[in-house]
Length: 366
Ligand code: PLP
Image (tube, rainbow, N blue to C red; front, side, top):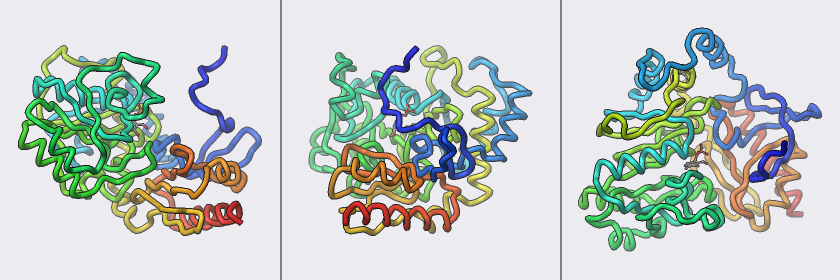
């Protein structure tokens, strides 16, 4: 059987350890992509592996109709960083967003959802309706009714479009897939105020930006508190997880997930957050973010461990060379190289990454 060809395959990976992964020929790479922003505590993290082993012997699944300590333990850890009354656990970023959209419609009774140009919120039909790129959407129409896109960072249009009919506005504080485009502080505040004035809810998509920028949520840099938060990716360091946070309840039977919030994922996610707290990793990000300087880089965007380098020419010129130099990085479109390394990496390793990337880029430019 062949796999559906929706992704290009760059190589076959066989193992990982800390910030490194190995291909089948035994070549080692610094993993500055981490499964697209997932292995935030590195691969084969000993503390997490221990918890996985223990939990797999104890209880892997309980079924969503049963309570268990592991979920409570995870919620306790989340409460260290944010203050929400309700949480819903699922298995991916797109499911976390999907729940956020459903919860917003249920709570407000309104259909209209506003999202942003260049936004990426996932591939299931609800999240896809909020996503911007035509190439991801056009072959799957009809998508959901009620979705509208406004220009990201344009406060004037936001003032015209967010109104009494709006159920929610969804945005990424830093647009990841689009190439690490940060929201302007004035825009985030205006959107929040408009939501409050019109009874709409602000959905903060932190699936990619969560825990990577020097705050638990990237939106916390803006001093704005969203009504609903969607998270995923790094929350369980590779064990599938999605999380939707809000301040209102959803009645029984209205939404659900077979695997969501299982004891295994909950235990690992609790362990991830304990490590992050104990080692003060979020605070440390401010000290050791990725910085790159090169004439080939037009601009370096993003924050902390979520950075995108806008290149003067196509990334195809750079990616094979980076790989030859032992670096795996991501791309956005054909001009942006994306970096989402583990957040617990040492300053020395980040310096090596910066130096090597600059050398490779400068070499190609010469
Ligand atoms: N939201 C954002 C901001 C993302 O970056 C992604 C994935 O890249 C998603 C949602 C979808 O997450 P998943 O691929 O886990 O469904």
